Image 1 (tube, rainbow, N blue to C red):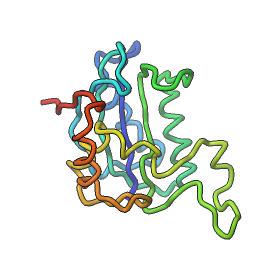
Image 2 (image 1 turned 180 degrees about the vertical axis):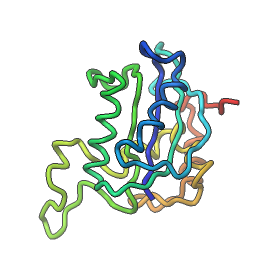
Image 3 (image 1 turned 135 degrees about the horizontal axis):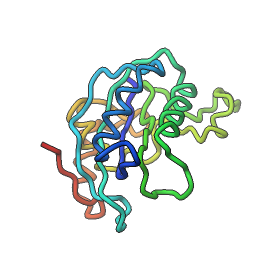
Length: 179
């Protein structure tokens, strides 16, 4: 199971809402060999960490692709750039954020017998599963909607277990489904 997180809190020149940005990105994915199998609802979410930037629209998608994890991450970054995304400051407002949350049960970077098995993943900044997905209710809530029994390959917990733990924390901000 390949899982992608989608987010936007800016509109850019060509879109009237962050939701429209995400819808356009979803339409573009097949051009990169990424097939959307299941898409969660869209959620309006308060920025995490809290800030004065606009609220986000987030969703999660289960996808299929013949691309390797590295190729998929590169394609997601290309899609972001085609929408005008520039990576400058961590957690800044952005027109499009596409995160590779999980790629099957694979774990990157990984070492077998002391040797790196994935070439250049450090240069790509590739960490799979996403290093903070278990700390983000804006990921866990939509993921729970479409795949509640998915098990985190490192932590061994299901989405619902992770979500239950996060709902007890007060630093997750507000998250609500769009109608």
